[in-house]
Image 1: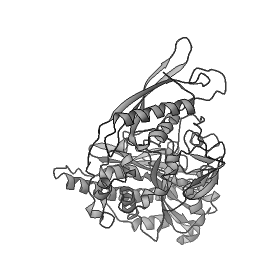
Image 2: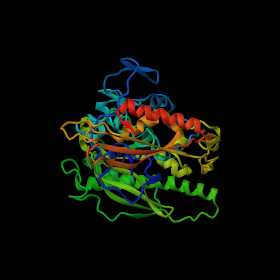
Image 3: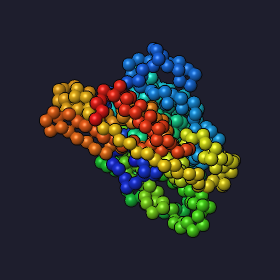
Image 4: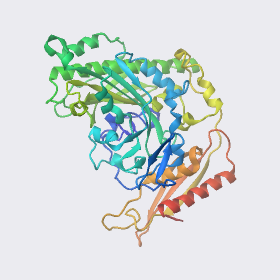
Length: 491
């Protein structure tokens, strides 16, 4: 995947200055999941009612790997990117307009349940990659899971070879922290453009064919900072066994022009919405810059950043597709580029939506603000908050099990504590009335070596004021679930 988020599931070797919406999960699919330094540890266990579970009308066998909570299962059919007039749908629509058919084919209805081969093996994830851990991924059984990125479908689309380019938009699933910019379900778009050596004119001059297609693209007048060469043998290498210098340069140029045009479309609409909301909005000239990057599935690779509202925002990841992916998909004569972008993050910027939970709201005060925009994108306007209900913060402190490594056990092969387990339990019990959960204190007993953790849970409904009785009841249930599922000792 392009990353856990570009700034969030963008667990990368390098972090840029900022990221949209403070790192809303989702930036990009495959080409970014990259470097994840989290340890692969067991997650809290969720038991199916029997040896099977039903998701979106289909029954699947479960085993000891099953860890999908019911609140996630219930949302699988929602598919926000297909709901007309929803901000995520509108964002998808805006991006698709830059990549027209028939050159690009749109794939928006792929099943979110995929095999481990599709999600990991087809993309070259090593067997010990942290992204495979139950602490990160929702498993139905050891061979089946809820996709963690749109790139789970990449090899299949390349193999089908239905068009020169494609866009995949989909809901994706990851166990993650709880705050206003992260949610266990979010939406990604992945795009790719390929050329076939067998179809190139002039004796198979594929570089000339790519440059010819580049000349057919629209031009723009934005300022582009791109100080680095198209590839660098050490920092950002081309695939020397597969691509000539001329081919690598042509692919980079076509990729960059295509994605610059996408950014112009997105941010021009964001600025127009800002002017409609505030006539005094200062319209600064749009600037973009290309930053060398590393992603496991592209080389050379880049991140694209945009200067907007006084800061550089990381928007997407991209690069020249690793040739092994084409070879393994049965289309070895093809070469091309790909990119990934988080739809939720872009939608939060476009509409100035402050909390990712709002995307899942069925409150008409939210949904009515976007009615008709799908049919008239020029009517796009910023979200107007209808209220902000009071928050209620409550702390939970507990001792970790002494049998865990984090709890003080120094024996080999001891399972560690993972924070995502806490997050998942809180979400499963309290759902969307939790605004955020954060660690506020840690303590290791000097004599026993046992470790204590204190988390602050901020309860706040998006739709009404919670009563003290309701909040206390939820918090007591969270405490009980932590004891039951993690074996902790409440302090």
